[in-house]
Image (cartoon, rainbow, N blue to C red; front, side):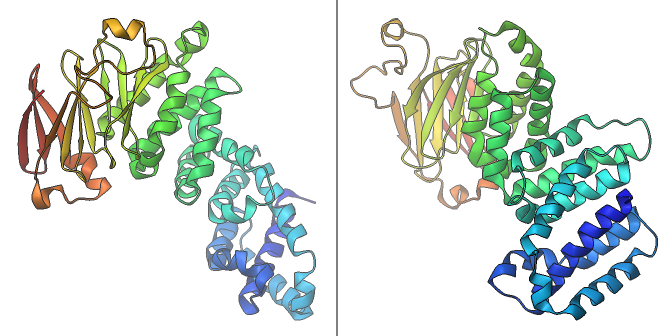
Amino acid sequence: MSKASTILLDLEVFLTHAISANKAPSTAEVELQNVSATIDDLRSVIATLLTPGLNTDIDLICKKRLAIGFSAARTGFYGSLNDISKSIVMYLHDEDTPYKLLAIDLCARGFNIWQQYVDTMDMLRSLFSLATNSRKDNASTQNVGPQARQAVLQIVTHNTALFMTTLSLDILHPKNMEHRKSIMQLIAFLIRKRPLIIYPNLPRLIEAVVKSLDPNSTADREAVLDTATDILGHIVKTFPTVDFHMNSQRLAVGTSEGAIIMYDLKTATRLYVLECHKKRPTACSFSPDGRRLVTVSLEEGLVLVWKVGSSFTSFFLPGAPPRQGHGGSEPYKSLSFAAGDEAHMSIEDTLTQVRFEWVAERSVRLKIRDLTLTFST
């Protein structure tokens, strides 16, 4: 049986069951309701990529199957989906571009269905590879990379937790260094295209990137250093809750719980956690000399100032934040402000409308839209 016949057989079974589910929905077929709405699109894709006149063939097959009756159509329902899912994974690795493109398209359209029947991480990794490593030596293969990247964007929008787990695992435990670099390139792509999807997962993602820079693995660190540096640069530029101080090689990362995690990139380790805000921090920034860190939470109307430079006590209390000049774990300074309506904005708006600007070693401006507040640190 030819490839075209095989994939057509798989897909016509899928389409038949999808239509059957629409005609007589039941508990067993509820999962296909969303996919069945895209039948016309799938039919068009198949017709374009495989055989002229395929629409008519599929219509005839579907009508013939439906004439048998709904109960017969249900027979082997899940077995058919299992076969189709495995076929899609197989065609992701096919040398023929049309079949590969069809598999990519079907991955994106029906991922929530296929994930129940295949190794989802393996499917995602195949898409990751196609998204970053596709050859561009002819016109047909040039379409593979862009389409795979669009499929990744579509899948990550609805399966963020699984997606981030796969990314983190592949950064920390790649099959080789080229794979790790490819994953990091994909992260940079997602930061540019879907920053709000990355945003709630930043701490987890940054933890994985930092660990990839472990100086105890010199060869691995050198292999990914440029790519990791590029990613961290994208993150700092895009997300105001993350800041990097070049001279000290310190990286500060805000979390949704209100804390700030401090990393040392020279040793690729987490130094300590500042338990600062009771609400989500909106932005943070190092002073020019790296000895102060300011954080702000618009929800609290509060700016906090922290001493973060190396101190004598740091050598005796590793993992503990520097002393702030008084007892307890309170910040060095706590400064309240009232921004009124200017402070009411979405997370998306905070990415571009809130920032710190240092005017001196111990003086900083907080800009919230058109409002400017100046603080002494």
